[in-house]
Amino acid sequence: MSAMCSLAQEDTLATSIKIKLPTITLNKKSVVNEIEIPMISKENIVTTPTIDIKADYWDTTVYNPYRNTITEYPLEITFNDSTYASPVAHKKVITSRYGWRRGRPHKGIDIDLVTGDSVVSILSGIVRFARYSRGHGKTVVVRHYNGLETTYAHLSHIGVKANDTLATGQYLGKGGNTGNSRGSHLHLVASYKGEYIHPDYLFNFDSSNSIRGKELWVTRKWTRPSSHSSKKLTKLSLYNTKESALASLEKIHKVYVVKRGDTLSRISRRNNTSIYSICLTNKIKKTSTLKIGQKLVLEL
Image (tube, rainbow, N blue to C red; front, side, top):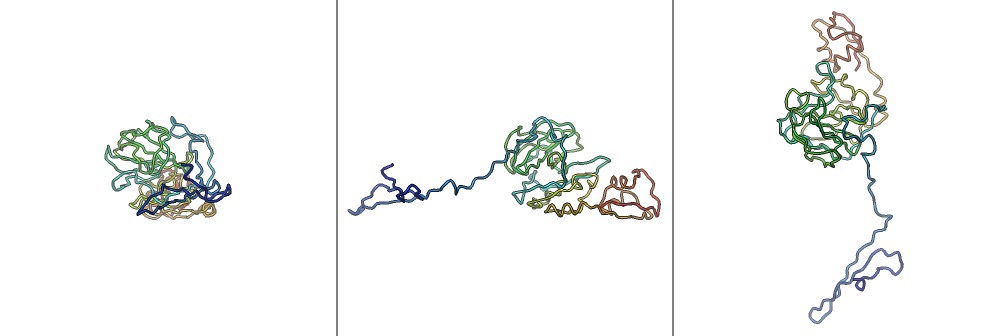
């Protein structure tokens, strides 16, 4: 082979290699074929940095390894993709959202399914946790390459193991009703360094399967279930820059005057806030009797 190769340039900085193919005789005429292969220098090679998402707080036996960390707000989360894979193959029916529910925080979003339905990873990543977890039942946690973690809870079967690498849309288990569950459904949780995030802030759960932005800044409001109702989607205020996120931290207060027929539930629905928030701000209880003309401070 060496006898068939020649450098395209005489000096040592050749930019290509010419290879002469065996001579072919056609109609008593010799035809010499030659091909030229360009050379690529190391300086021109573009390398993609390897992200080691297992470097920090990688624990395959603990559901939340970030328990003792302190988080600074706002949180920056970036995405390379504009869409995600639906965790279920059928139309996504949301039965309960992130927020306050039955006097307790509901830290994820519930998607209806039938026991045995396949569940897939919404983004590529590595399985950090795949085992039974108290409350969540059979659970899989996937850490993605932007640091975000998604949890798939109440599964009837776990189809992966810790440290498995998953592609977007790859099977991880079957939906079910294990753990503290009132019926077959997928409990989907989004978290970043241990902080639970309202999934609707990051993902659009309609048929578009769209991610809400390439760069999203998350304020504390979107990590507090008490600021939301599990019965409906809170009005979205997306922040694509740190400056806009910081500017939003100034709380807006509204004085509401109680009218005839008002209840804490009705006031919370009409003003897009939670009963917990109203009680906390006004130092009253859920069982407190409201009086006509009473003034309540609402934190919006």
